[in-house]
Length: 302
Image (cartoon, rainbow, N blue to C red; front, top):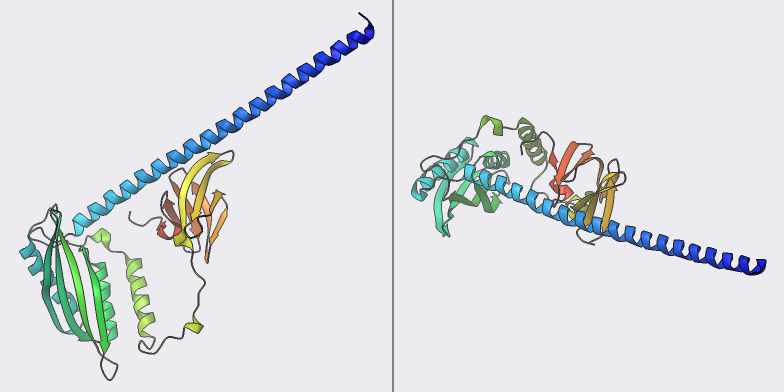
């Protein structure tokens, strides 16, 4: 065999080794890509499960709160006690001619009885606002489903008619007393905020037509930004945020600044089940499945 033939054979062998190595590297990269895709898919599925679990925990807390605020299980007792409570709160707010009457009573399957009342009274705007504050701060499972407020000719006193709905749950552990507000339920910051809001409303002329041109704040898009998934990357946890209207998904890491409309915050902690972010108003947390508009301020009662 000549030297030329030997060199040719060597070149062919080298080419074969190079081709085999390139092919092996290509197969390795393909396998790595498939493994990463499978991992991301698995992490996405796990995040969805975690979101469902967190929603379940929130629903259980909500049901527990409903039971604590339920009217007594005895509908007749509940109607009498709650009517007296409404009348007393109207008087405490300084409203005149308070009238409370039962409008309807309906059962909701075997789970609850809904009592509906008609409430009428009259008084100046600050007194109505004080009643609404009292109503909202009460621990009862109730709501104002309709409200009609009409000023008198001098535009000083307001006559109001309200429709109030209240629930008596079958599994409530009380049958002859209303829910009582605990000392731990008193939030001085909320009370101060309510007073400030009432002052801001009463300082205006409530019956003067509003000029929308003077007040056109930029939309806050926090309520459209949903924490849809969380997974780990090379630099730590990554959160996926889905925009409700467009469906666009963006990913962020700890330290990133997010901006949705006029809402802006810095992500300070991600742990796989929640996002802690910071704004000018403090630090908040939002869990998987929630939107940024549902953020709970850290330190608040769960």
